[in-house]
Length: 442
Image (cartoon, rainbow, N blue to C red; front, side):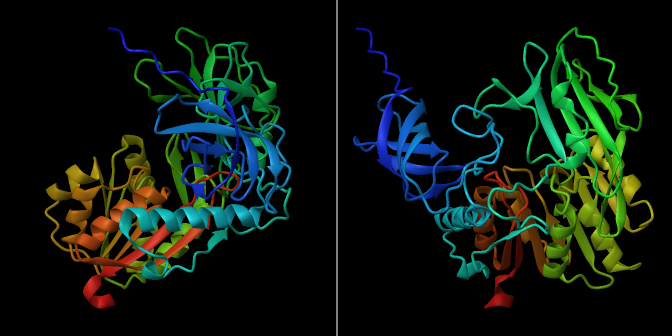
């Protein structure tokens, strides 16, 4: 006997009371049948009509959009961006919330993740619950900071550039991204015909006039002639090997942070907010308090931002080992730090390279892992090195909480935690946790 197919609930509407914020840019509600709803475009405490966008009968949860606000939160404003809202661009999560409310919501998410995944309270990690705005981002409600120095545009079938809708491959055509940095907006990507392209990445550097456009063509498509109003280098992604190759101009942009200039190759990682690199370096160095002559690790080191800051402070007798998996990033880091003879950069995955180094003890560790976190095995290895302080830079509070639990199981406690709103209007948040051996903090 054939089993009955499960009935889709997409399009079904429910009138609900909205509960707390959840990680990912939505809030939690429940249907009258008790089914969990993850609802976007709403705020805690509101009464709304939620329309299901994903899910079926019997599913553990449903996804939904708030399509009508029956009783609004005092933190609600009209979204400044005309492309924000149900069924539209998925890039921003909190355009409809006052800036201060956005930061409170992010703080609540961090606290919830720490408690649920690591059993830690804000008091346990020396954090007052505050999420700090980046310098210059404390704006009145309704004003949007132009912070995003790297924007990935998708291209639709007619050659128009836009941004992806939430959890969709569909392209929302836009005439301007409000959170894009001025240097990106000036390129006018949205007004050009990009027929034959899969995506366009626009980059404007912090501290230099460098701009770059990276083109990803559809299979067999020819590259367009790119003539923009501003000087810009042009790169392309090869459809066969995925490599980024120079078409015109420099194959890198020059970024500035902590008094140094860093070369960052095409597609290489650099913090997106123009104030982020300096903000994070300051937080990490204030937490570690490097001493002359110490030995430090910079893991997942990218173009060498933290390795450079450490080397500058550790002096001629200090030493830094950086580990990075990306080949181009390693080339950049070695170039950027060539004036420090006691800095070494190794290529490969941290969990593979670090055991091969033969290092058995260090004084300081900085790790800035990808969104998935470092993981239990890597944390166990790091804890065995006996560092007097460890700085963990995290872009995902769930991964941070999981790894802090592992550190706790291996003899480390969190001395302080600081949180920074380096991704305004989105649900993303950056944290810096400073750890030390538990015996020292007892």
